[in-house]
Amino acid sequence: MAMIDAPKRLSHGWPGMLRFAPFGVAVALMPAGALVTLIAPITGVILALLGLVLTAVGLYDLNQTKHAVSKNYPVSARLRYLLEFFRPEIRQYFIEDDREETPFSREQRALVYRRAKGIEGLRPFGTIYDVNAIGHEWINHSMAPSHIESADFRHRIGGPDCAKPYESSVLNISGMSYGALSPTAIEALNKGAKEGGFAHTTGEGSISRFHRIHGGDLIWQIGSGYFGCRDKSGRFDEGRFAENAAGEAVKMIEIKLSQGAKPGHGGILLGAKVTEAIAEARGVAVGEDCVSPSAHSAFSTPLELCAFIARLRELSGGKPTGLKLCVGHPWEWFALAKAMKESGITPDFITIDGSEGGTGAAPAEFADHRGAPLREGLMLVHNTLVGLGLRDRVRLIAAGKLISAFDISRVFALGADGCNMARGFMFAIGCIQAQACHTGHCPTGVTTQDPGRYRALVVADKWKRVANFHRNTMIALKESIESSGLRHPSELTPHHLMIRVSSREVRSAASQYPWAEPGELERGTPNHPAFRKYWAGARAGSFSLAGGNAPAELREERGAA
Image (tube, rainbow, N blue to C red; front, side, top):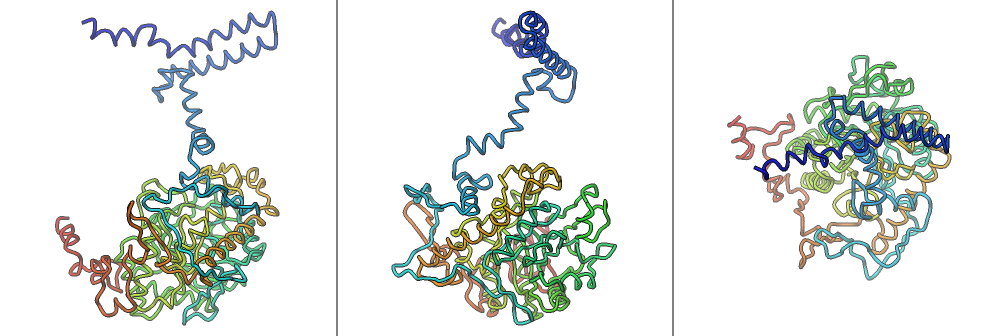
């Protein structure tokens, strides 16, 4: 019996009462402060007031009913909440490893900061990576390195139906809307793009007055809300589109189907946040909710999407028109590819966003477990176009957690023609990865509409860092391409990318992954496992999988339902 009652006595006896000790100390501070005033009046008053405040906090904690921890540990529980509030900063500055990516490692952020500031980026004493770890990757070098005069790598975007092809840098700024980013952040990015000779994607929030100030090249992104080209009911408006697309700064049009941060998820900017400048850019009323539906209303089938691409290209005067998507159901992408082949209409470019993308705040389930990562998405799109004989008509742009010249080289080896980068350029203008983007309390003024915060981001200084980061990254890419004995990043192939797959085996990407042969899908003999499973059931007239051609396991699931 004594053993059974011991825990009960401990919880109700003096050891259990220790949890109230901080509250008791707070109460005792008041008379103690009064006594101290006899010797040191100022110190005594401070102690008494501190005791009064902490006693009031403790009484509130004891009587509130929402937080059990605070009720059981009055006053002291507040320390837990304080530490929890500062936990991200404590972890980032004092605990995390230099290579721990949460989501970007300290090493990655420091690389951007150095290049943006023009600081020497050499690393002494060798690599900090375990080159024998499974998954370690590298690009093979050559015994006969090349010499390249300029680091200004370009590629032409514009298929056979494009009247105004664009000579694009191989690295541009990915889509981040005004409204998500502050006015000064948009200005700094656009001015940097102007001076650095690369393009700035608007994000689906359309072209704001801050995108127009400095005249940098723009890739106008159009999402399901049709901001900047919508009628009063929120549907696509050809007249407004043609008016905006005619702008000299607009070099390309990008139809956004989905984004890596939250593919298949719509969004809403509450009316309270819709300022005059945001309303002007998006074509809505001040104070009106800005809704981005999860699906487009201008098309509902792959063939209709192809027709929409052709129509936007025509309305824009022949400017390159393409798509942005994070790959989801493979048969939906296959259906779109079949529609391209059947209609003869191809986008001038496709931006493949990996699920690791993340400038848009998203539900945790979407950020962590929705959409294909960049590697898998890029290779599937590349292989499909190769198999259909369409690869030479469409440029592929890779986006999703790219930072270094090696990241760029890797996606080129896997099939990309160019890259977009978002968070790298955010770091360049001062982002410290506080992960407070959705709160409006960004400590560096990058992702806030609070004038008191975004005025701290000085455009005259930050645009130089944007241009510096781009230039120094391109120089690093040039040196990497030279070391491989090549002349342009487009010459990288899967044979150049090496991957350690076990402690005793290394493979090139050419042997590690399946690759389609030119025209393979036209001949009806796909070897790629995804094509064998889903290609026959995909159809140009619908995004759904044809039931009769569905894989057996899918037919069984549908039958059970």
